[in-house]
Amino acid sequence: MRNSVPSASAGTAAVVSCHVERPLDDDAWSRFDRLQRRRPGGFDVVALVRPPDREYGEDEEAWLERAYAAAARAPFGLHTHWTSPTHARPTGGDPAERVRREAEWMRAHGLAPAYFCGGGWYTDDAVRAVVAELGLVDCTPRTGTPAPGVLPTTHSLGALARAVLRPLPAYVHAYFHDYDLLDPARRRALSAALAVLGRRARPL
Ligand SMILES: [Zn+2]
Image (cartoon, rainbow, N blue to C red):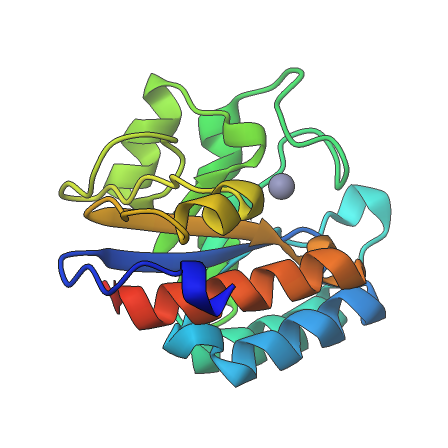
């Protein structure tokens, strides 16, 4: 692999984020915790965390302890799942109201979310308006370049693994899921790709 890595493209600015989907799963959390501490490729991994869902019996205290640890290390954000822990997109209700409620719940518990990414990449005009009103940087768009209040998420793990072997675009925002870290092959692919990205791009 070393021989096939193109030389540095000084112009690339990169962001790395993780959708922390299973914050209460001990295995997924410990993998994420270790990775975030390690700062792979020299990147602070932005934790976009799904809040605890009381309707599904999720433990708020355990969640908060982990969220405080993640927020102390790197930028922190809200990852809303509208329907259930495993069903991200909305199936009813008022999606914007849920974003506001979750961000305010985080703030009431001493967290300062600065980023937002809609579960299942869902958004709508009202959600965008609430995200902007709350002062959150929106990572939900899948294409484009940074703009005030927006940091599009451009590369999945697979796309990143391919992209780092070619000339890089000026902006890369790579994301993965905490549960990707449970799969040894995906974990290795992520570490390798971030190591190369770290040599070829600067953190935004
Ligand atoms: Zn999600």
